Each structure stands twice: as C-alpha cells, then as structure tokens.
Amino acid sequence: MRIRRAVLLRALGACVLVVCLVNLLNGLSPHVGSSHAHFQLSSDRDGSWLRYFIHSRLFGIKSGEDDPQINISDFLYESSDDLIEISHKKHSHVVQRILQNNDTVDMITKPATPARYSKRIGGVDLPVPLWQRRLSDRLNRTGADFIDDFDHRYFLVELLQVRIYPEDRAKWTIAELKQWMHFLFLAGVEHIYICDHYKNSSERLALSLQRYVTLGLVTYLDWGAIRDPMLAQIKCYQHIINAHKYEAIWQMALDMDEYPFSVNDKEEDFLFRFLRTAPAYVTEISLANFLMLGQGDRSRDMVIDRISRMTPREANLLVKPIYRPERVQANVHRNHLIMGKRVAAPSNQMRMLHYWGARVQDWGADTQHTLDITMEMTSMRDAWARRVRESLLVFGEHTAFNSSTGP
Image 1 (cartoon, rainbow, N blue to C red):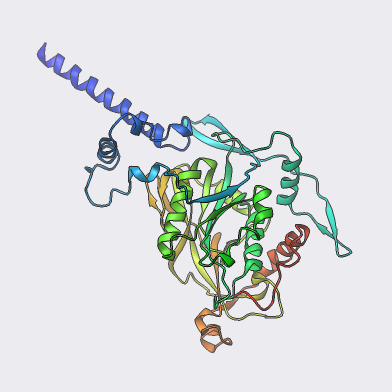
Image 2 (image 1 turned 90 degrees about the horizontal axis):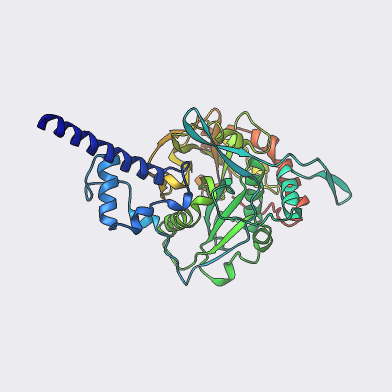
C-alpha cells in the first residue's frame, strides 16, 4: 500500500511539473495563446524564481551559471521619457492561426494582388510596383489603422541604426538610404524601424523621413543620446524587440550598405516566399556576407547600378540575421537564442550583398588587388536597378539619385 501511494505521489508530481512546463512554453511560444501573456508569471512571482525555473527546466542549468542566454529583465519594456518614437502603422495582411498536424502554424494571407497600373512621370508611363499598389489600397480602405493584437501583424520588418553625416568617407547620404529602403519594400519588407544615431541636430533624419512615417512605412526613433555606436546598436535592436516584437513574425537587422539577394527569385516579395519555407523550429536564419567592391561605374547614380564586382565566396563570418523576435535577445551578427535553432541560408539561394565599394582601396581608384579578389556580378543590377529606380520615381523621390555620393 505504501509503495502504491509513493508511486501515485511521484506520478502526480510529474504531471504537475509537465503542466507547469507546458504553460511556460505556451508563454514562450510565438504561436500559442495570447501574445500579451508573454512572461505573465513575472507579475505573480519573484523574477529570480522565474529565471531559475526557466533555466532549470529548459536549459538544464541553475540560475547564475555561465551564459544561460536569457535575462528576464530584458523582456520587460522600460519606457523612457527621453525616447522619441514616431510612427503611424498600417498593416497589410492578416495572420490566421490554425492547427495543422498538431502544430500551431501561422498562415499569412496577403490582400488580393491589386490590378496593375502605371503612372506618368516625365512624359513616360512607369509601372507602379506591387508594394505601392498595396499601400494605396490600404490607405483608401476604412478601418485600416494599426490594431495591436496577435491577428494583425507584419510578416517581415527591418531594424536599422544609422548615422548620416557629411564627414563620412563612404559618402552615404539620404539618397542612398532611400534607394535601400525601396529595394527592401520590393523584396517584401513591410515596415522599417530606424534608430537615428545622429551626433549633431543638423544630421537628424526626421524631416527627410516624415512622409514614410506618415504613410505607416517607417517608425522613427530619436537615438542620439548613446554615443558608442556598437552599444547604441545593440540597445536599439533590443528596444525594438522589447517594444514591438508582437507586431511582426520576422525581423531582419541589416545595415543600409547590406542588401538581401535571392540568386533564383527575382520577383517582388522574394523574402516573403523564402521565409515561408522556414520550419517552425527555426528561430534565426543567417545570411552569408558577400562583398561588393570597387569604385564601379561612377556615371551611374544608384549604388546597386554602379558597383558590380563581388567576392566569389562569402568574405568572412560576419553574417546578418533574420529572426523571430519573440525568441531572441539582441546582438549584432548573431542573436542570443531563447529557443529554437539557428540555420544558415544556403548561399546559392539567399545571401547578403555588402556594398563596401572602395573601402579596401582606401576610397581611391580600383587596384589590382580589388580586381583579383572579385568577379563580375551584374545579376543584382540587371534584376533590380531599373525597378528600384521606377519605385523611387513613382513615389516622388526624384532627388534620390546621385553619382557623386555613395561608396
């Protein structure tokens, strides 16, 4: 009788433990339950207890041991009276949750593709890109304002910390920033969070980006207080994860000289189609770093149109991530994963083109060394230069072209 009672007590204890762990995992999962229940236990229990519980049950370690890759305080959004964040978000699709093969998955339904039409610019009819047609439909639809719940999320957003200033030897300007933004919108990015890391008030980008903010395409963050660039960048990423992680299924953290590039898919929304193939267990996808080098053809007035020499293999291990924001803590090249796995994007499918330009030749003329370590690569120019140009012109960005600035 005593033996049976002991067995029953152990079984009951195990069931209780399983129930607790399942409830905890529901709080951690980006797919199960209300997104606003994330770490709800922290309001009922001491934070150190919750940290110990998560570490011991999920990672098999006790609180305080080396590199548990989780810090409860990082998940609690701390507002700051000094932080200026300006945004008017308008979402473009609906996320439906269904049960499939006993796994909850996200089913993304974008609006029906708007009819094709053109806009006459300078006496020439230019096709309006798909992302701008969707934007127009969204702005003309009643009740399209941002709704902060699980069922109204972006599929993919971009995070950027940037400083644009006259003394920059690479000569990046607002023109190149807008070229990069329009390429990302063509690629499938729906919203861009920009931490403006200006030093002098004259460098602030708020006015230049005002139209994008008003249209719900950009969230602008005044980010000039933290002067150390690397610390500011990590804090920027973590702030956006903390404050906005329930607004998107995927986030991407690339700099304005870094362009995602699909080797085989050259149509709008290629990032959307690529990410839809990611299994549910994948938390982060690393894009390999291919350098685009040299002065290029300085008569051309867009970065991707001008520079067409690429390293034949990934240049280094400085990858950049696309990730599910509810499962990570921020870092620059590889985030700290709370759950799930990191995978490398096959470079013969998806990669990052990093436009260093003339950096390795100290911003001078092309050298034999630059030619020796690169190969001609015009696929980016051939596939996207014209469409980025048309996207900018149709949007009214007639000054976003310059042959004397950029790398």
